[in-house]
Length: 363
Image 1: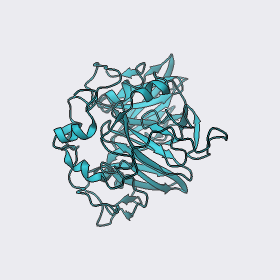
Image 2 (image 1 turned 90 degrees about the horizontal axis):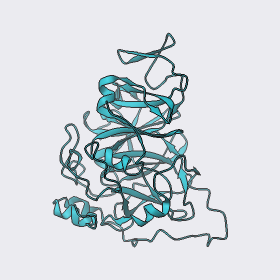
Image 3 (image 1 turned 135 degrees about the horizontal axis):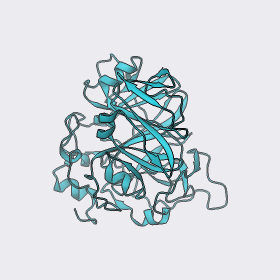
């Protein structure tokens, strides 16, 4: 794939024309450099931000220089701003083997079907009393959650390293999803505040969270939510999601792994970490080291996911039948008495190109 090939041309070349149905709004392409404060005031409070946690391996300016058109205008892929949910037993719920992105905040559990988000990429919503956005980039296989305050996020129509660039409707800053650090606008250099999102199936999520609500296909847009615009799918993995090259050349070409191999990734206080998900499934517990500091990753068969913990004291953990023994006490995989680090599932190229110095656990 030539680096200059736009997403629209790439989609057309692959006969993935369903995405063209996403062009509902004509809001212009935007340039990402709008400053509503004219440089005279502090940036707006929303979305909530923090200092960027670790180095991306690229400056904001370098990433901005690598931004390409995704082939659609700003908001051409429309975010869901008025989501409609149903209960777990509702008739609009997905099939058990459908991928969903699970969120639980203060006891409030929500599930977001991938087959819906593949056409919208962002849901502006609330959960547990918090104003949040759930985001999904099909090209990088990344689902992430951000606190948004009183603003909303939209799809900019731009990509960097094939990854969705979000913009916030308060300041028009640009935020590549994977690093979650603004590369343009008044928030440049600051990081969004995140919450964990779990990549799992509807059957697994419903089993663990029977009181969950699930996003319906009542989005206000006409889409064939049963068909994938990339002619692919999961369970089994097919089409774009299976193998081959990304649609756009990665910023850094790291061929240690197949580009679309799935890793559980974390920005630890000591540096970036990537753990091959298939290896974690096999081993159940792994103990990577990042810049000399010990970490612990554990597999959770209930949701087919993993969690990453800081383990500076090297506490002993034993795994049996989906539960873990720590110092003689039994814990569920998501409840260890250690500091948990936010993690996300990502395709190898999506993580390694942004964090080329990532520590890797793959055997």
